[in-house]
Length: 241
Image 1 (cartoon, rainbow, N blue to C red):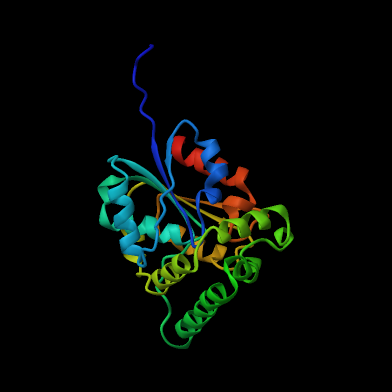
Image 2: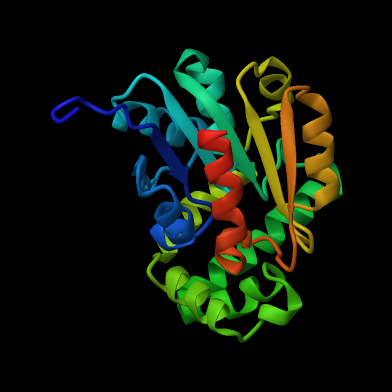
């Protein structure tokens, strides 16, 4: 009937490291009948601070929250802080464990620090050419989607990059959040994701009995951009069933 209000789901699409709205463009088009919000973390430098900022930014009470990569960790922290506001979660190409202790953790810090220095000295695009090659399916290196990823990285600043690296190095252990989830959850992962591999998503899926697991073929860590139609299909099913 004309004039009858329609309840549109609110979908919060949380970007990963160095990502912005472009990472979610395909998903956004498939969810045109929902209210989609893609936050910008600015120079916030902790996962809890990012989660708190998003919860304050989005006023609606019931949220469908999808997070890619670092955004998945922000989504889990939102579920820790305000579980009553989370209707459903989608966690893509992400993880839940803190930085490792000892030599492995120090190696991660050194690797990430070297990339920050490269961005500061040679610019974001030059850093992106080094970093992003390991983030995509091998067939997508130097393909048009790779250029789109580099352009997205170039829109970021070294200061934002450094802040996000600090957030990731201090990331919390979120196993307890996964175990406490009671809302519908979908995990999705590019089959060739070398950074957040499929085995990790299978482990997360096993911790959440009501969850589903979707494997995105011909994609690496940047699955939402590499295979936007496949990811859009997963998210549309997640929102509408």
